[in-house]
Each structure stands twice: as C-alpha cells, then as structure tokens.
Image (cartoon, rainbow, N blue to C red; front, side):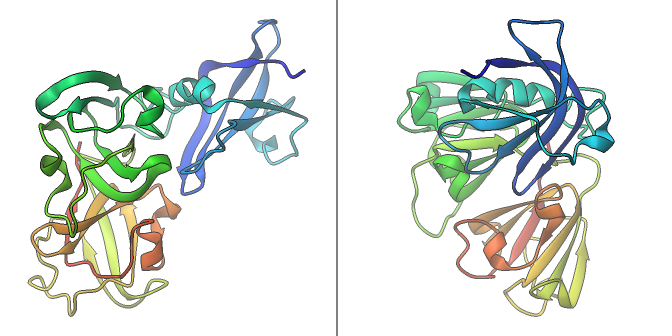
Length: 287
C-alpha cells in the first residue's frame, strides 16, 4: 500500500507549459514529519487522469538533479492535491518566478448572482463535481481567468477579467453561436498590467510577413494587416485574447506567454475549438 503524502508549502522551482504545471518542492510523508525529499510534480493539463496525478520523489537535494529517473511514485487523486499544487505555484510565493496574483472568482448557478454560490482561488476542472450543473453568473474579484465550455478546459473560451458578469451574455460576447454553458475555468497566470507583447505571422511556424503588437487592435485590417487570417504567433510577454471578427467579436482564443513556450505555430494550437486561422481583432488581457 502506498503512503499518502502531503506537500509542504514551499516551492523551489515552478513553471507552466502547454503540458501542465511542473513544480519542484518538498515532500513529507504525513506519518513521518522528519523525513523530506525533493519532489517533481507533473500535473498533466488540460486533461489530468481522473484517478489523479503522479508525484515523483527523489532523494537528491539539488535542482540540477531533477532530470534523474524517479525512485518512488505516489499516485493521488487530483482533488486531494490540487490545493497543495496551487499553493506551490502561488505567485505570492517570493521564490516563484510568476509575479501575478492572487486570484479569486465567485460563481453562481443562477443569473444575477442568485442560487448556489461558490468561491475559487484556483482552477476548477469540472464545476459539476462541485455540485453545480452550470455557471450562469459570476464575479471576478482578483486576477484574470479563462472559462471553458466543457470540462477539463476544452471547448469555447471566455476571457474573464475583474468585474461582475450577471448573465451569460456578459462574458460570452458576440459569439458565433449561442452557448450558455461554462463548466471549467482557470487563472491566466501571465496576464499583466505592465507589459504585453506579441508578434503575429502570415504563415505557420512563424514565417512570412510579421507584425509586432503591444496594444489593443479592434481591427487588424485597419492597422495594416493584409488579410483576415493569422498563420502563427509568438507571445513574448503577458497574455492576449484574439477574436475571430473585428470589434472583439466571435470565437475567443486566449494566448499566453507561458503556454507552448509562447509559440503558437499553427491555428490548431489556438484552442481545442479552433477550426480556421481567422483572427481579425486582438487585445491585451490585464488583471
């Protein structure tokens, strides 16, 4: 029988990529507080296994040794360690390289902030597992978030910045088809109030004509972009939301500097709902 383990609230290293959160912290068996090891946490995101995630522990104490094979494995349910992982990656932690935070969102199962109410300071993979059938109104109190149509961060995306959203239309915008459903959501860790910078490219794999952006553009064509498509893009800093149509309308695509290494090499990497490279307006996401 495997030991159940808990994570100490200390973090030596943390980063986020398109595959998940990778953190190095300290592991302490709950029945023996005197022992500790350096650990590597791999949280596969956006689709963690329903059985949980694997925590790989090493006896090494140097970050330089984190490439060695794991000497011990503990498989814990996602719900048991989600809070501890978010504590490790909390941007308020002075050793964490991500400076933003904290995050807080309150969701309701009825319009106009009525019905069942729940507060979150970390991601939610499936609101149905929390006893809600759907989210029909919400309040973003801290940070910037992205909501998803389906569980496990799939489907249509909705950028959620600080403010009140009394009805679905308040956060869905002028979408291409009507959706009254938001089942999962997460913080946008790289959203910035200081600097956001990106480069868009004519073709896939960052080739062809290019244009550097550090502002909001309600119409790419009006600022000189030659057509209604973007082949690829590189997010150097911050986070942006790209829209299918001018005037910030249509499908939304959240682009972050800490996903894919900031590189979106083709439209299929824009999001699970992306069907074409059509993008005609872009703006910064600010917290």
